[in-house]
Image (cartoon, rainbow, N blue to C red):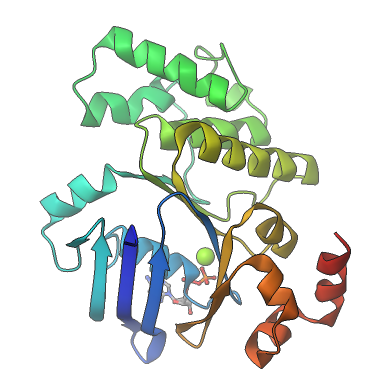
Amino acid sequence: MALFEVRGLRKAFGPNKVLDGLDLDIYAGEVITIIGESGSGKSVLLKAMMGLIEVDGGTIRFDGDEVTGQSEQGWVATRQRIGMLFQESALFDSLNVYENVGYALREQTSMTEEEIATRVAETLSLVALPGIELMAPSDLSGGMRKRVALARAVAVRPEIVFYDEPAEGLDPINVTRVNRLLLGLQESLHVTSVVVTHNLKAAFTISDRLALIHDGQVAATGAPESFLETEDPVVREFIGDRMRKVLRAS
Ligand SMILES: Nc1ncnc2c1ncn2[C@@H]1O[C@H](COP(=O)(O)OP(=O)(O)O)[C@@H](O)[C@H]1O
Ligand SMILES: [Mg+2]
């Protein structure tokens, strides 16, 4: 059974049909990367799966239960099982690293302060930033801030983590570092990871499966290698001849 099962999902903004009968399964334990042209609906899909935007039709099931159309209270419970690292997930500048990473633990769980402190320390170690609890976000580099945001996203130990352009705005060294961390967390926390990126090299390196969104639907899914071999014209055009050579060589 899929952890997430999306069927016939539709979402339009005025005349702009962004999702137009989209089907997608996400399996427990996999790293799946959603690719597609800018504006193809990747972020809208993630937001719909978290109940952050209302859809026009179709169904979303999470862990066997239909979540489409559930109450806001239901969505709050669903979102507690989902970690998210969005492009706009800035840290709270007025809070130090400890308070940022421990935020959801305090809001959403009944953990004691001691348990929170232990969890924050463990989680900072997971993102290779042990002992920085008392630092202020303004004292951190862009790469470090992204890793603290990642720590904050996984502090509650979610079952699934959504990453929307996690490496956006980072230099190549930090891009590699964030991608390695993502895989490290996958291993240490046994989560399921859903990544949106336009960095095809990263997508091919980290993913078990890719899903290409085109014209509001998932036009193709499969292992990264299958995206290099396929004759499917939509996939071939999206990847492009030059990128195909680069990816084959790496
Ligand atoms: N809140 C909104 N209001 C109107 N249009 C939106 C809104 N959110 C997204 N869109 C439109 O939906 C389309 C898909 O957006 P998005 O999912 O952000 O694309 P991407 O694949 O680049 O993440 C775009 O055309 C975008 O302009
Ligand atoms: Mg987007």
